[in-house]
Length: 395
Ligand code: NAD
Ligand code: MG
View 1 (cartoon, helix red, strand yellow):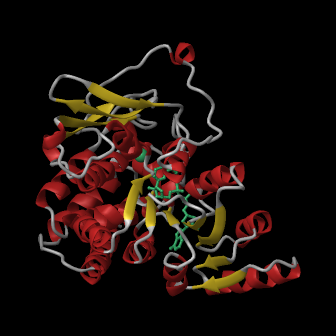
View 2 (cartoon, rainbow, N blue to C red):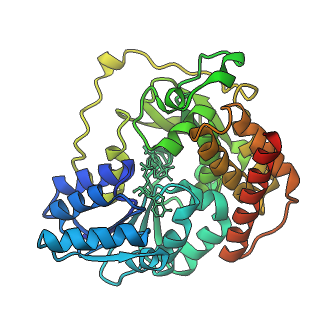
């Protein structure tokens, strides 16, 4: 595999973006942040431009981009500022870059991530929603354009590290019996089912082990995050749903495991810090310093495991269901979930309405095959409008 030098970071102002820039800053002789992108955070993007001096900075929002362009000039920087979805696609496919960190949150990440795959880039995939919405189409694209995919999601990165290096999608051929996908259980692992209807956004975003963006934090609280990760693992490792088992592991020290037919279980362990999977993928196949402190086994002291509670966390059941139905259903699940999470964060509905909204939308839209990115995007739009209709009908 070609070593990475110039990299585009999609979503540089987010939690994964911050961690990626932290790894880059530790290896200035090795990596160069060539293009940085974000939605509309002018102040943070300006600070990143001052520190990393990228060739391009893109803000999706045109007014924010105009403000940034002005500030960049005032500060005497040479960064070229662009805006709009086409510019996101452009900086994800520039001939100069070696890799793209796909770390935009949600469905908004799909078009630039597709652009990176279509130009045969090394794609460091944090944006799991791309695989949930369009798994088959995306994996076919990666193959057709000779792109390379390395998983950033900590569980999938752990599975990748626990499989043989030559793994080519044949789990049975490698003697793999199961993938054990670990989950912390989120902030409400011990809460009663009854107490969940009064949960506030601040409580839902207070993850016990990981510090992350708001959307994925709520997804962790509903356990939809694990559901999305089951679908992600299905596509990345060609694993049938019944071979992917979710294991609750509250300490988040084991980031996932692979069980083999001889009884061996291979796991990847570490402190819960995304700079480990990011540094693993950026340095691959070399190991490079990530800034993460060494795991102190004596401090960890014990590792616990529990079975997931599908009744308390219906989102996990809905995700397995969407994967089993296939076709458009995972994209329906994802879109309804994004509307549900936004509505919950905006105080428009209760935490327990999140799975109710998603289930309703999944029942309203008939299963259908999808073949192109346009099919995916129209499914996404349809599911969003059904979710909004449901919310209005509830009020
Ligand atoms: P975040 O909310 O902290 O950051 C999101 C980034 O995307 C920001 O830079 C934001 O400006 C940008 N963005 C948002 N909407 C956009 C739009 N419409 N167009 C262009 N850019 C947009 O999110 P995060 O926690 O860093 O997560 C990013 C992705 O990585 C998600 O898909 C998440 O599931 C995945 N992931 C995150 C973690 C984590 O620890 N944070 C772990 C595993 C996977
Ligand atoms: Mg994860």
